[in-house]
Image 1: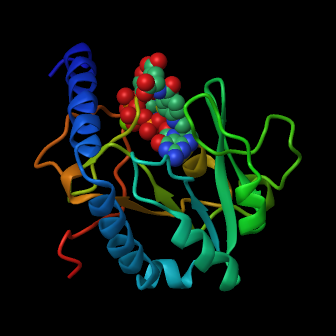
Image 2: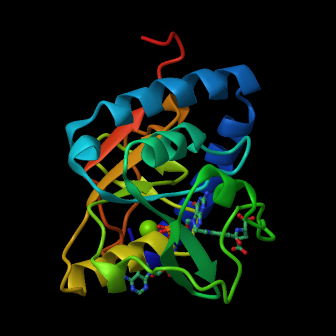
Length: 202
Ligand SMILES: Nc1nc2c(c(=O)[nH]1)N(C=O)[C@@H](CNc1ccc(C(=O)N[C@@H](CCC(=O)O)C(=O)O)cc1)CN2
Ligand SMILES: Nc1ncnc2c1ncn2[C@@H]1O[C@H](COP(=O)(O)OP(=O)(O)OP(=O)(O)O)[C@@H](O)[C@H]1O
Ligand SMILES: [Mg+2]
């Protein structure tokens, strides 16, 4: 597939996946979120990680990460969250649930630290052990379709070039976000593992 065909295919797939997710009921999304968060909290890679980046979920669109935040703050993990400004994304320190609640939302309805908010930045303060990855679609081999700005691909590229080294990556998803195959280019980085929710709670 040529680069432009991949780009167009990704665009169509993003639209389809957004529709799929929007078609789930609130209850289904909540049950799957609880299930996949439980899998993550029991995962040995999460358990041994200290410095962890987690995305702040968009209501109705993504696996809800509030349970992860609560667990991190009560279990001595050091929490970093994305801040995207223009083409660039950083991971900045988040201190508590109160800190989380007080964050402003971006024009895409994502909670994040305001521009100019002076916070510890992950790569200049020791790097990350684990990144919990958002996205619209995933394969079980770790291919990932994001929201189309390349923020995470570029961030992982920076991590790879940085002295603190490459963090582990675990994606969390609704089972409806799992695809057999996804179009990818050479900039797309695979995630180490994809965890997804089961509606029956098993
Ligand atoms: N919760 C959460 N936070 C996150 C991400 C994410 O996927 N989930 N990101 C992961 O990257 C970064 C933000 N990524 C974004 C990617 C696209 C658009 C956006 O403007 N989307 C529009 C228009 C797209 C366009 O103009 O081409 C849209 O979707 O309608 C916003 C943020 C950082 N924070
Ligand atoms: N490491 C990189 N360096 C430079 N540009 C990159 C890099 N990774 C991705 N890009 C560019 O970013 C744009 C969006 O990439 P892509 O369509 O893969 O986004 P995505 O993976 O869906 O988004 P995200 O990573 O933000 O969730 C593409 O034009 C791509 O070439
Ligand atoms: Mg990509």
